[in-house]
Length: 543
Image (cartoon, rainbow, N blue to C red; front, side, top):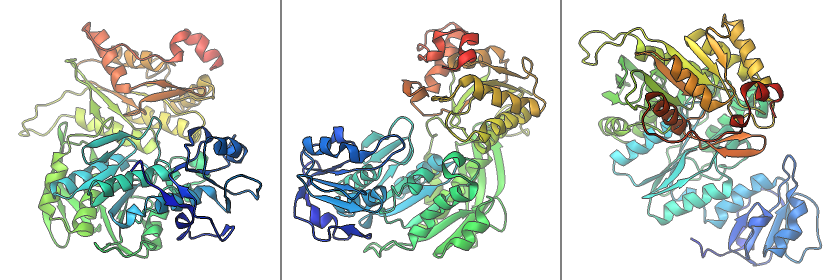
């Protein structure tokens, strides 16, 4: 893989957009780079205009570092290496990367998962089903890329990896002899054309709720970005192994009517409603998981999962629909795959050091995700019907710790605090990637949302700027039978203050806080800059 060399002319041989000059030299290309500092001799440098940096300004640096050719959108000349002008370098990158790696998506059965919440869990469920069916499969999620026995971290604050990384992962899968891949795709990934040349065979949507409206401008634009997965099914070329071109959509979600009308390929719906093509009946919830019967006009199968909450029934149904109808896997085999998933990092992940209450870390960072996380926690607390063999929980309380990110959709701050005021007994508002915004300002907006739904500061909600201290405070409030839920970070490995990413893992923080509370040996609380000042100083200036 490291010794790949493809001629510059060949990389452009199937390029679907206009470019100039029309005739290109046979210069050998050995890699693709977007950062001039990362260019190695023989690389193709793709110059892009970003928010604050213009890659075209760094073309001389790229050439000095050994770039063999350059692609950009400006009308430039006079370079010592070939320069090709394209209309949209970001979109061009996808097709140039696919060509450089010899179109790996055409050699794989490619399953794409998109949606606001539940993407990573659904991606993992499908992967487990493929494994249960003895299919050689890989997976790329926002947590990691799994290629055979190799697991690669896909980053700190992750969206869909850049196009050349996606194509590199797919090429490694082909080289490893894999036949299928499950790709988690984000709205950013679709809006920035990062997965356009993946040749999707099956597309799945979990839901489309309130998120990223700061970047997409409106729910309609956000929905349209997600919908590009289903539009791409129409363009997938025929494959020797067959390609079902199946769209799998959520009958219970507000996006259903729009997608149902838009999709031109084969499509199936899933949901809790009886009018969904694949639906759930006889549902049983418990603190240790979910059970239900999944049924369609063709079959009926018992599903048991260690995942909790109603939203995970939807995720299981989505995975079932895609694999049984899209890939022809037997429902009973798919059920085995679902049962084998123990959990997903940072998704309703329990942290148990022997404390007399439940501590959970979850990735919920949208209003809808927070809503379902709190509803799930509430269901875990409620007394269970007799005879389930799980014991009866008392009427404990749900204590939520969460923040709302800086430089992102501001409306979300109020909405999340409103949701917590309505569904949690107690809430602790804290930092979640304030970036260059004032943390005090963010918490002010959240506090206003909590008050608008009857929240009383100092009684039902508190502001604690330092996230580690917020988790400690929430644990100090907990009584036996309560649930403390730290939301918003999940599996992520960093938190951004200013322009600096600080190493942070909510699960380590929860263990550190619990071990301090229980007076046992445990990890040290990770450092955040909010620890440098007392609470009042930090909230005063938010610097």
